Amino acid sequence: MSLQNPTLFPALFAAMLVLPAPRLPAADIPSGRLRVDPTSMEAGDIRAHLNATAKAATAKDLDGFADCFTKSSRAKIRKHAAFRFVQHTVSMDVLETQVIRLAGNSCQAAVRYQLTLSDDSFDVVSLVALKREDGYWRIHAEKIQLIDHDSPRTCSPSRYACVSGMCQLK
Image: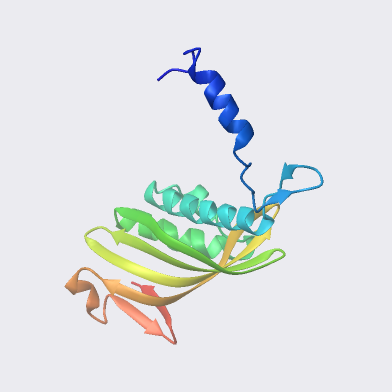
């Protein structure tokens, strides 16, 4: 069917006049403009930032990856990432993000991602703290809650160390 059909257009127009207009829950009734919930916009920005972090890690973009973290932790992250990027083929994919708390310039999110270092694959669930610096979200801290090893050889104590809920891959 085409809208150029002379008998169809008047029928559609008449139906539009008769049918009630849908109510939009986010509509600003006095002005008639749509409002966007700033919390959902921020959550989208946070998800985009975490995805950009994973993309930089996968690309072994050391500057881009380090820039995803706060200035106070950037030098340490840069050093550790440089060693990982040299030692391993790196792949990181964010699978799910849930913003838990968003208050001003700080955020806490539960993040599930898959990390592959050479032949070893890890499914990671962590609590990520983010801060807004210079108008951008940056990762401030990460507390790993769960690591599921896809490769049996990664389970040996010589390959990882867990201390009070914080796991570090060696």
